[in-house]
Image (cartoon, rainbow, N blue to C red):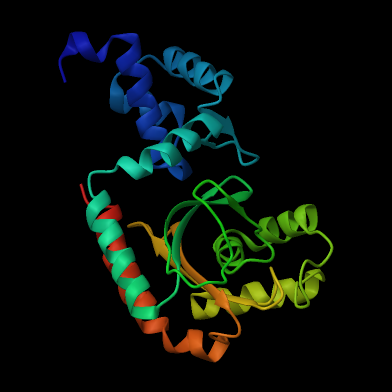
Length: 253
């Protein structure tokens, strides 16, 4: 990077944003000022601008995390990633192998959003589209995501978003939900056993980054008349194998 370019305001802002997003847990303004050779006052001024524009938000722990604008940019950029064709080929193969619709979703704040989906054309199925939201407390992927964050935060989110039962097995008691999160965290995947809709079951597998942080959920759902939970357990190895391939495709440079 040339000295002239490194001192221009747009480049400085982008470099600061990159440093924060790559390692928010260890971020300090002093570290970035030293690493990028930028005055500390300038660092604070640019961070304030990024927060004002909602590219960053300050968390309760005084760390800066991606704001809604960054998350929306990421969500809308995913369909155009360089490995789009490779990623979809893995999803299509999994769909053909298990004979069910498969989906990829990403956490966006307190929501989980579908961003890719390959349909298996059964006459009866749940119609969800890219951009649709999943309930965190009642879907396999939602529960999987909550199991990946701090337990106290997950339970607070549950208390804030839980609604009257939408299906016969929807979990509405916090003690039961706590047990469910512990179980999911231990086994590494999650089921939906008629918790979102009556007559529907689902399975979700995490896709993590190099820091083992959940970034995507690979899931399938089906009518219980076609597959029950025991049947979903049988396709677990295929789901796990596909998740490993997708991880390589999604995080490939």
